Length: 449
Image 1 (tube, rainbow, N blue to C red):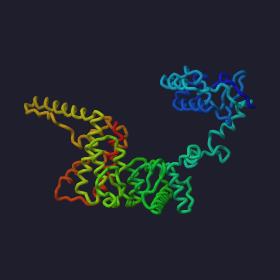
Image 2: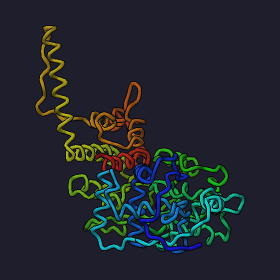
Image 3: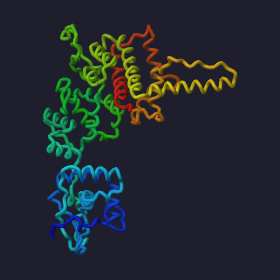
């Protein structure tokens, strides 16, 4: 029997199937808010703005003048909390509810319910709603692709992965099984700029665009799909930048050629004649535009993206090294870490001198003009105790190559650059930027807090 019931007469079930049983409604509300705090606020906000789903009644059983909720406890807890925020013991969460109440909202009072004669009659239908497919009798949960297409229906935004699926299906006139193709895995891969370079695509204003010949791009995307389908690649296997880079290098040996884009730099040089070369992955106009600070680093990005890396390897290899060091120093200085590093240096020398004085050894002079080297700064940011980079994957990535037994990334790089007899190969700037430079630069500018 359907009935409209005031929220005050609806009792939150102390034996809610979601949790272990409690004694009464008050404890049930406390437990619900404690376990589902953020979700409860989001639900309350949605109800305040949109109301309740008219196609889904709250399931209850009569207790006389009041009704015990069998299905719908979250919704009614959210409504009771809107009417009486004092029910919320968490002060931060309570504050959010109070701020929500300052807005012009209509809080639901009367609830459409379906009243069962007894709980047993309701269990069949509650179970089918919450326990999965049940051999086709229950609700069939949408897979990731179905969820994405529904979001597209609502917002008009199709994920990059499904855009690629449609691109391949339309271009090759083939059907791709999105139930087996792990869309979350594809989206994770495409979120990486280097992975997109391997595929010959990019994302502009949320739309996939080709950066190379369309036939080559569709062939590469199709090859990626075949790999994921054949090996059942999960998103965890390509979750980090390192894993994505290794995964794409395993599939594709080269990055497809794409036309060089003229950067936003006024110059008397005839760039139409001079800048017709092809490139794989080099500093581009995009890097310049995305770097927001107006300083020497931005000027270097401007100038470096004008040079053909294959024809200027001797100039560009040390330039990349300097670019990375300056960008790291600049970011650490802005965030106040350079002062801490210098202070740590001074304290370290002072402690050593105390020992040396006891041993009647000459003291070490504290250099007034001392500043940290590139290696020292890298070591500092990967030290978890310094809390410079909170993302553990970024620290792991940096640690992978800046600390080697008996050597270091910086030491090896410096030896190569300072050796007048070692001439860089024409591919060295691109390879170094692709494997290390771009990732380090992005970590410096995005992960240092």
